Image 1 (cartoon, rainbow, N blue to C red):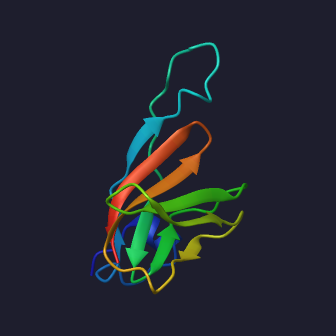
Image 2: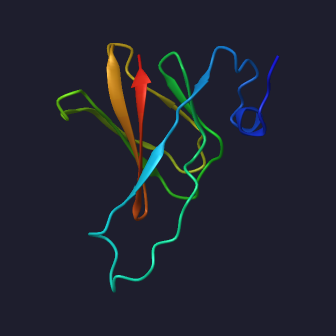
Length: 114
């Protein structure tokens, strides 16, 4: 069985059933002042298991999370609470969505299937 360090940190013991969500990063230029250089950042390790998102680490501040449908409509919005690594999504959601995770000046996005 394959185990990754991030999966173990996220509390996932059976990664065969969990899928790491490939995330891309976008810099929110509206939040940046002075137009200084932009540093690359690693996206968070996020796994999907059923209707639960597992984050590879917990964060000191609450993290905004959104799901948008193919039309760009927000169908779900919540916060991953500070110090927590798991967020349960509503079981009534079904289909393909774009997951958005907002961290400071960075927006991470990836496709998920529920």
